[in-house]
Length: 279
Image (cartoon, rainbow, N blue to C red; front, top):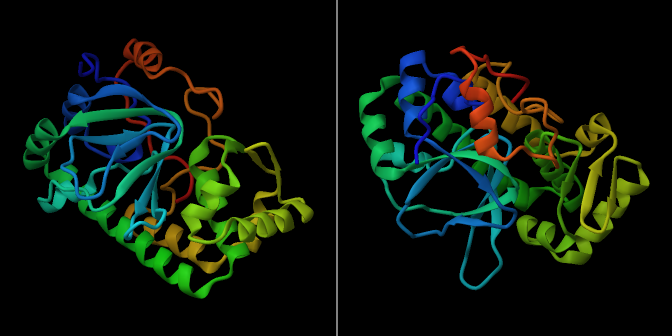
């Protein structure tokens, strides 16, 4: 059921930027859900049933061609939402959406969301800007795939995940990385081994830890900075996900159950929480 107490911070930056009345109406339509690792939220070509505003989970946007494994072309965390194509009047998803980081999210059924989208000029304005950010991500991904080596591309991917993971450690396998980057697994193994040798990351049995954020940024290709600049251009230099951020005092890897977050927040007075961190 949708939340009955929409007066607390949403912890999703698109929602937080809405004026108070628009934010309250949207949150009244929301229900808190927990995103499970590797859960498929929608398939390419299928009608969209729900939109998602992640809080501390994050989602890979995956393009699929013929029988090949999917290739990641975008990523959604608390800085954005899944279902931005609805702002264009399109109800069919162009991409597969796969949960890459487990955690809490707000979810709204398509019909009430489209009604609110038609009502709220501020919501439409936010989604128009965010649709541009997603387009920029996809353009960067296409160029990155063709022109950049595996090592810098892997560093970029790890930074994008770190931005949204709310902690320095997250779960990922070499096989998953190979699929998302569109390369052979051995290539990922060699590139990840080099990042470990340089003490930028550590990796053990699917658990990856970022040890040196600055070093990882230096190792990444230019596409990472370009994506951040695209976001800042639309939402300001203080917008976007923050590396290793906390959500209500909870660190990634130990997410609070979303209904518990909602119950805790329901007792708080209405307040606007400004966007945190960098894009």
